[in-house]
Length: 236
Ligand SMILES: C[S@@+](CC[C@H](N)C(=O)[O-])C[C@H]1O[C@@H](n2cnc3c(N)ncnc32)[C@H](O)[C@@H]1O
Image 1 (cartoon, rainbow, N blue to C red):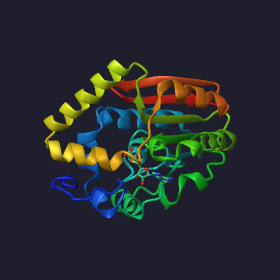
Image 2 (image 1 turned 90 degrees about the vertical axis):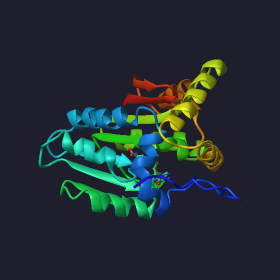
Image 3 (image 1 turned 45 degrees about the vertical axis):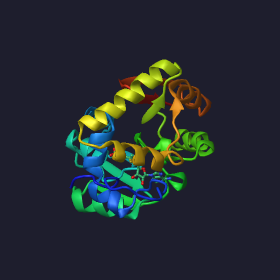
């Protein structure tokens, strides 16, 4: 279904939330809004799948409709792997359960700040940390580091801020043009930006690297970048 959430002028823009209306159009919204999404998700799924062996468990934190979960399952035929998707949006979890019936997957409505990933071989946070309160980010990473397997892999994908203001602005302006080329009007772009202002807070790539280290991870590699979107492979 086509995303028309911000198509009409809204006298009062409320903070963006992952409501039923957003869940209903989410695949179209994210595809037309996040440059590189259609590469980032299948490849994170492939990398995660390669890391998962017999009887091992992956977590897709902030799974939305389960795109990453599905990508992992499609790249790994082992019947004994498990993939658990967590999201605190009831509409997203209901949609994920409808779409993905593979018995190796399950979906749980839960705040990821209360999650338990003990023994996980893979944990994926695709475009989620940016919606978590900044002060909760390091404690979350520390908890994941403590709970996941020592041989595990954490994948974190985010919109990032560029430290060079000129380059940041170049990418931001290009992003606006890209959204317009994908059929969004000026009004839609501007209303969505206003709605996201308080709820999506991005960090620089350097902040991410420093935080991975502070949380006890030993190695973090940026494997993907498309303008201001980046994805990291992070190792205990
Ligand atoms: C941009 S979407 C993630 C996209 C998804 N990972 C994918 O690959 O298609 C962000 C998701 O994170 C979820 N989310 C945000 N904060 C959360 C929290 N504290 N606990 C659980 N889910 C959260 C939202 O409900 C939303 O579905």
